[in-house]
Image (cartoon, rainbow, N blue to C red; front, side, top):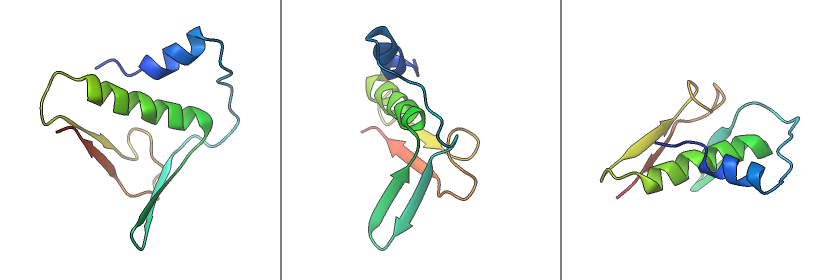
Length: 83
């Protein structure tokens, strides 16, 4: 999977991708709400993962976003599935 589609597009079109925010995304669950918190670049990287999954030629494909990839250590794991 190409994981830089969004990032490359934004760079090629002159968007400012500088960010001084945190290095991790945090996913939390409160009642029936899921909150995803991250810096500009973290959210762009998450978007890259999602677009790459959507464009994958594999049915029933999925990605795990966890503390080994993009999430902070105190975050719940995020699994995104393609139907």
